[in-house]
Image (cartoon, rainbow, N blue to C red; front, side, top):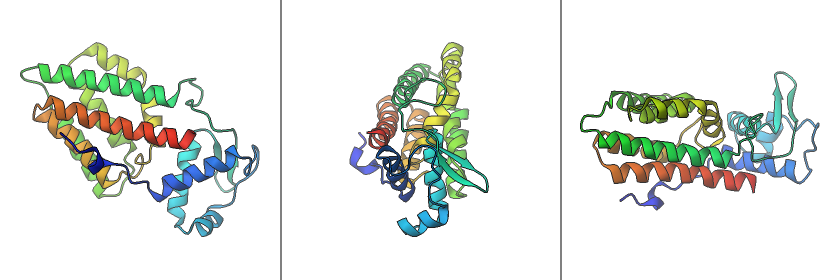
Length: 224
């Protein structure tokens, strides 16, 4: 049994600033159509580096609240909403469906006496390497979850997952560990991969559910 307190999300500076920016749009401090303060001004105000501000702005931009224009700055384009741009899909719904599909895939995989798990192993190693190299972790994160679904050996399940691939990427980008995954969340991803590889169904399902609950909690805080 995994202790949830051991893997609780530690809010990054960027995620806290992203929430502050969203709140300013909500309360009208940053009206729609207005250019918000520059990266330099925000970095001074919040007492952080410009890369942290850039990450926070990117999170808010992924929600279609800001339009970041090269050389001109960031402009407020819309009020916060729980929907993915252009798709009419609630972010929480996408996270919930991801969890249902992934847990189902894990159960199918571990019913197979000889599951093909090389893809899961390779994707987990790639994610570890990306974190070590301080690379953007959106794609390695997406690839690991896709590999878990592929391991089930169901072409229908893989096809269903593929239909929400873009929405999956959006929920990863918006999450507090999307681009720069924390060590706690990386460790939980590794526990997920290891428990699947080791055939431990209970630990696999629990790890998956903890990851998705972390994402849901962040969205609740960001959009409340």
